[in-house]
Image (cartoon, rainbow, N blue to C red):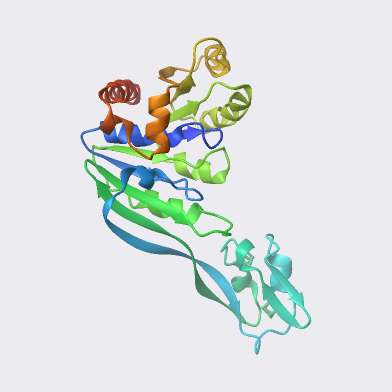
Length: 279
Ligand code: SF4
Ligand code: SF4
């Protein structure tokens, strides 16, 4: 079962939830699709890591063949091409690898070349297979890396936890596309609720079954909880705001492997999520 873990913004506790749920299983796969800032591997410290570079196709121009007709420039909707001072300039950073300019060039002056945009790493940490996507700094889109991570999932009965990029942009959409269930992680602030609403709209748009984990819970009013009650969103569990959990987390330690109480908390949450997915 593929379970995507989302949040409206960074720092909400999405990685805390996905890492600890994965660690609470007998066996599972943890996939870090937060490719701009992957940090699940810092907790798991996987062993036997294998790495593979991920490349996209970008155009390359043969200046001997290019006659400056600018058909490619007009075609490119991403403004990745410009004809300046008698030369075709290609802005690789904003090229989306659609290949259209190569097809439309009447002089066959454009061809494909590989450009490495990042890498995926695969290793193991006790009961968890840890797959991590890493986008190189300055690259426009991590979607090819996320596709690679998700396409490499082997069919099986085990739990697969997808630690999604924060927010509701296209990389978050790509990450939840094949998920059987979505866990939304929310924090008890008004700002947090605003961002939470955006991912809530996203999972509704994709018609994904979903529930909420309320993180950093304190005594008193919780705007995220009020929002869930108002919208009728299933609350799967509550994680208290406490110093020990904060300390473990800031030391990149996995709470369920360090503390029996957190093991019970996340095992109970895992049980609830399992029942929800199987409904
Ligand atoms: S379409 Fe081909 S020939 Fe025309 S400007 Fe582009 S690369 Fe040059
Ligand atoms: S491959 Fe597509 S996005 Fe990239 S430069 Fe050509 S037309 Fe533009």
